[in-house]
Length: 265
Image (cartoon, rainbow, N blue to C red; front, side, top):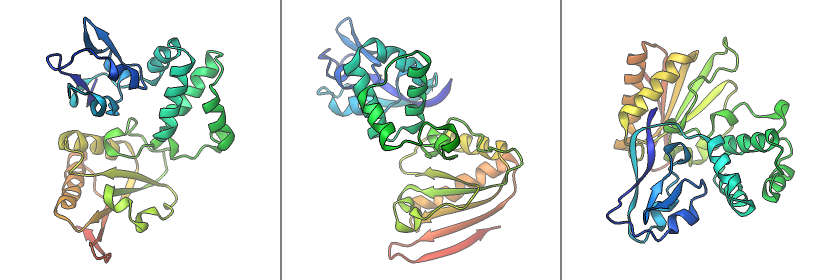
């Protein structure tokens, strides 16, 4: 169990039209007694497509204590629905760059001797090295790099590996300075105080990362905006709770495109 986002359905608003069921790529919803119902939290990854499509605004995303999302359970459900649903699920994963889920799905199909849909074969043809163990990029496991989505806090591929942590504000990452090649042995995290409103969960995740890995340095990339000042506060609290001391540098980008650097004592 963990504190995470899941779909919540207001039965008083729901009229059982079933539109959400037809557009859910995870087959996580069913109509039960005339109302849309979440079959199980482990099937829901809270992508939110159903919330946008519901004509009665009966579906929302809420943060609660729920079991972790399980791609293998989703695949069991999806494969029972037939080729059209399988195709739609793969299209959804590819469209949203869900690389870890794609890898899990390919392994599931291979293990169960199931034929891959053409959309998956086309993906592997376009990216021939994706499914080769010896060619996988070490950062794929950490994708997506949003702090709140990190499932495994252990970044070390080698236990003696010293890691440089790069903590980016979401909006900084979109700037050209945020798209430069990352240094060797670095790990990327994205965090936005305005969008990631569950501060306690974010601090807990950061504490796990700091406690688990051999992180000696951190560079925070933030905009010169009031909201971005919360990133430094979050990281300082996480260091305190994890009882860690390290070199921390802050790179700030102004709205005029000017860069400045500072060091946290």
